[in-house]
Image (cartoon, rainbow, N blue to C red):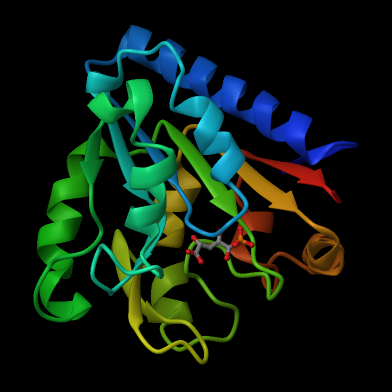
Length: 223
Ligand code: 6PG
């Protein structure tokens, strides 16, 4: 894991949007289509605002979420709503979006179909991740039930429940995160400092998944 500390979060996010656009552009030079996975949460909004205007052949870019809440798409808790508003707009409106959610049923019933839809787009060309103050990444929560399923095995997607949250979620598994060609972890805010320091100190078998991804670059700014 590479660790880069920035003095200014705004500059960091502009820089990161440029890096991601550059990586997608160069991957498009070698592939008919490429894949970009992005997290929900509040932090990456400014990255999306800048990335959505990048000059790219977006029609050949497949966009997916790292994790999604099993709620209607127009719910405030839906990560899809966020990326539709901030990322899949301007030039990026031409990208193809691969949802991690179905309109009916429970995650367990829809999982095979959703996994079959993303499988042809793996390994991910570019992966952007966040990390919560409880050290969760995507929806892989330290200590949650199904943690073992998310961290081991061949499944691409794992149903997960965030501790204390009302609805189920679907998350990319650690296998999918580990196999990505390029991984950026975006961490901003004083409330995340302690979590980040703890994550870096823990031995690999106890560390959160963001700290043990082989290709990951952690981009950190306190404010
Ligand atoms: C989600 C995310 C999650 C997120 C972290 C950080 O919860 O939907 O995909 O993994 O990246 O919770 O979230 P913030 O950026 O809001 O702190």
